Image 1 (tube, rainbow, N blue to C red):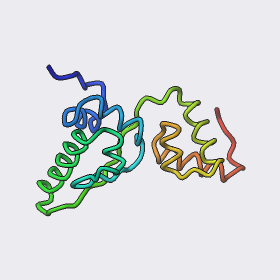
Image 2: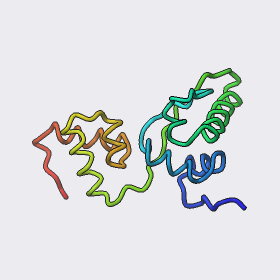
Image 3: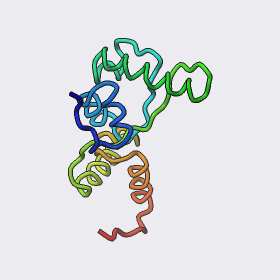
Image 4: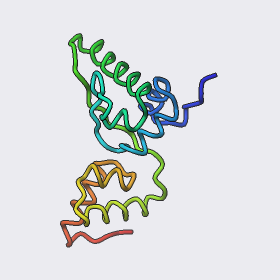
Length: 138
């Protein structure tokens, strides 16, 4: 019996179908909102293996690289994907976590992971933080 993944964003649903719903949730929590590189084969110390385990990582590597090769007809060593966000609490809390992370010197990717926001959203928050003339409407 397959798990119902209809509530997930399309890419996370695809990941859940390939590697299981637990792997999809783990990936969203670890890297949601950021662009990630999926290699053709992940070594044991790769973040993907550390995040979802060897079996799920192997399935994901094979799936995404095969999908790109079939679309382009070219052999690939890996692919970049933009992972959707996982659950991150309220929007105001997420924006506050992003501002705190940026204030503490975190990169865009790290601030996105800490806050649960999309990397582009964090980039917009950083831009507003730099422009002190821009007031907040919220």
